[in-house]
Amino acid sequence: MEVVVARSWRRAGIVALPFVLAWAAVLAVFTALRDRLPDPVATHMGPGGQADGFTGLGAFLPVATTLLLLPGLIASVVAYCSRMALGGQRMLVATGYGTAAMLGYDLVALLEANAGAGRAAQVAFPLWHLAVSFAVAGAVGGAGWLLAGRDAAPADEADEAAEAAGPRLPLGKGETAVWTRSVGSPVLVVVGAGITLLGVVLTVVMDVTAESALIAVGLISLALSRCRVTVDRRGLSVAPWFAPRPRMRIPLERITKATSREARALGLGGWGYRIQPGRSALVLRSGDALFLRLATGKEFVVTVDDAATAAALLNTLVERDRTATGT
Image (tube, rainbow, N blue to C red; front, top):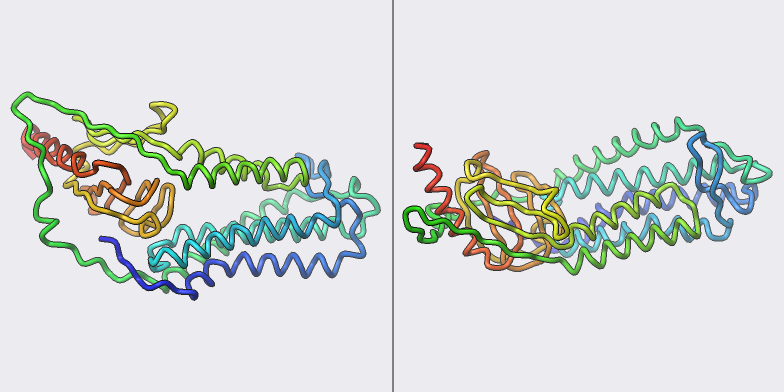
């Protein structure tokens, strides 16, 4: 059951907070060290910690601002519009906090490493900074996880009528059936293309540490922007549009019941693969969605057209499988 709460600037502020604080720290350090920084500054380090990429001093702060405040703005808008308590979006909040902390630490450490250097090529960046960066990200991400838990979603009240029985698709003895649909996400296409483009631009303009990660995230978003959902005698499977594998499969024996209903993407936590307490979801758009109640008591959701037919076929196949196995 989707739990809807009122829109809240407080939730948006909590999500944006680490990005703003990280940007403020970078701004403060940059202002304090500006007269001691070379022009250009070293912004990318090779495997040995020696500078091999540089950015003009005047471009450093605008690029750092974009890296920190743009994702913070996007995350806060999603949190505001989602109408879901942060307790249902803990993974998203923790990831945002950890990412902001890692970027903020790396940028501040780069500025400190550049301070006092006669030329950017002389700058060295000890590799232990990477270990500290990951540790900081983990600690701050954990704090975000705990903070989100204080804004927990109200407990779900199960719809007894819907839980009593799911729809069925009549199949004669010995008959079999396969249901399959493709579903795409314009949002993931736009986001994936934008992140990939940002990573490419940063690679050309400013060799920052995060450009490879941005390109990877963008390409993954594009790869997952369209999927094929299939229901057959083996259960439910979801595969990307370009290949039959990698594939997510939920066998019949793990499914207790299937239903369908309308769902909002933001109500499920946003677009992409979402993990929430008691539920995981593959969200490509708002609209018709297939809800599976699993044997573990958890729920899996995938947004797809004609979900009612998929649910009816799954319930029939699950019932047949139980009859055949005597469970």
